[in-house]
Length: 218
Image (cartoon, rainbow, N blue to C red):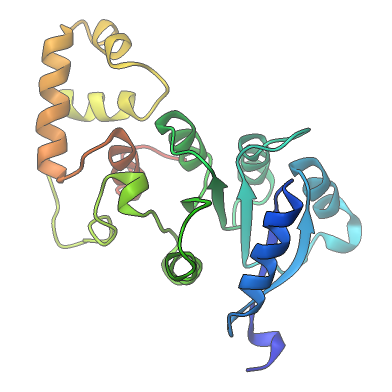
């Protein structure tokens, strides 16, 4: 396979040992190659803003969530505003629901834990390139191919849609109950019913469904 046909990957991660190991792994794949590496989001953005790099070819960005100077979320927000067509996968050592939702809402196409196996990692790269997103069940609480099921169209009541939209924010369920003038018990009922209807287990799965089905916009 010719080099020119390979998908071009950029790594943004401040842990040099991890970054170099990741580069070695990616370059061992027939259809991917690492073209650039940066230690934080600021370096990466400065590179993109250089005149000669305005039209640089980027197929995939691997973005560390926790970095000094400019972290993954700040970088993702900049990409959403300035390079919305770029595909980025977030990398992290933790799976905190809050940060995963923020990264997704700001355009991340995947969220991988750094202890992911090479096989799953490769699947993630391929899937994001070909389908546009990849989330493991461990992270999302939803079956990976479930979100791509276009045959099943679910109907929601107005209050349920209102709840879904609010649940895709940073608000707690108690805050959502207060805003909707409902009791926390009623909100719990909405959540349980919607989770059962969608066959999901976490709020992250709900956010993924809402984005995929354009209930909320990113």
